[in-house]
Picture 1 (tube, one colour):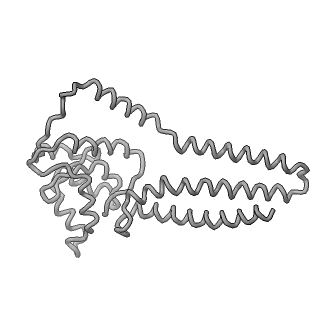
Picture 2 (cartoon, helix red, strand yellow):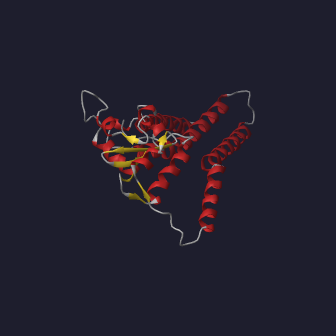
Length: 241
């Protein structure tokens, strides 16, 4: 009984710590401009991937020990070992189901990967995607939330995957899709024309597809566009507002 109580106490404190860290990194993933020492991708990884793998075993051990203690304290239970074995089977079964649900891949992701492989296999090896010229006319075609290109300081960025994750709301970006958003980016706060942080400016590089008037290879465009499809139903952290 003593070791069960000790395990309960240790896992309780560890659960409190894991819960606090999960909340912290979830907050930093949504508001990455709070600190520049932890990137949004790292915050998202810790919140969605790492900490759940820590939290689940701790909760499993804590709840199982609590159940053992509750069984021992019940006077009406005659065969306590049978109950404890039954509780263990139930808890391990629940943990196994949780593990399957955690690691299983969504069907659409598998289908998309298979279609992508089939499409690549069906194309001739010499058929490379042609380069695309980033003219103002071409940029202006990408003027919606589902297909958003923006010019900032004569550079073109594909912000399709970022619109819904913008801390200030998607409308702050979509109104400049297909157009020059340099002034909007540099004057978020009228009292401070250079209100965006260096972190936000640096994060734009991940969405950069080329300079205005230059040619952009499809390899610089397609990954960002396909990313918007995978992110449309889920949450992912964005850059600085």
